[in-house]
Length: 301
Image (cartoon, rainbow, N blue to C red):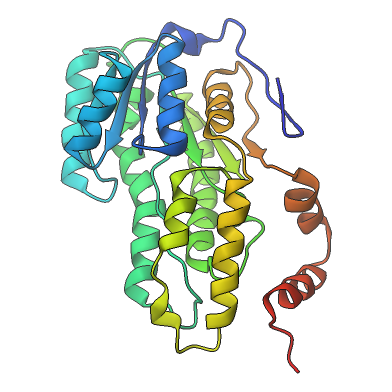
């Protein structure tokens, strides 16, 4: 399969297919929901996390009995432990085929004026949370040698923002950059157990996250010198999101990352790849800075 300039290889007799249970975090909407739907269509049982019972009930009705809801916030250690115990009880001695760390949030605002508590909230959700989830489910993926079956695989959902960083998304970029660094170390550490880890770097994806971006209340920054640029940037981000890839496209990338016999270590899945990914990473940083400054109106008079 070729996806947005990235060649993705399907599994051919990969050992992952022998086990049919996966855990996916953040499945109430968007990438998580469509990834759940795709894995169910491939014969998997999906343990999908949501934060609200109403979402669990809705998805159970929509997706059927092979979807098993887990009520869990990825920043809540006790909830993660309860979810892990539920999954382990249902698996018995079998291992998970995979863990997809998809849940996350976006905190927007200029870093000079962003409340430290908001910065911490961003890192807790997008970095610390995935680590806690990975630690909890690692024994079911293969670190516990008493479990049977092939070892599982981890897929961490990052973002192109980790590499091409716009203004006003500094906290989000920091969390995804940190997630990528953590993932690099984890992938090498997990070699001890034969567990692989793959990173997915989505560009703009047309999900409810962008609808929320349109209604996000950023008025606390109204008295800052950035306010005019923030209003324009908010409109730009929402417009880009609505022109972005479908969440179904990302679900296919996650499926390949989790099931391919020899996956790449990362897949960047980006609309308008030349403009949004290739050129910003090839051009000198100062040239990209200058283009962003002109677009945002940051050039000093």
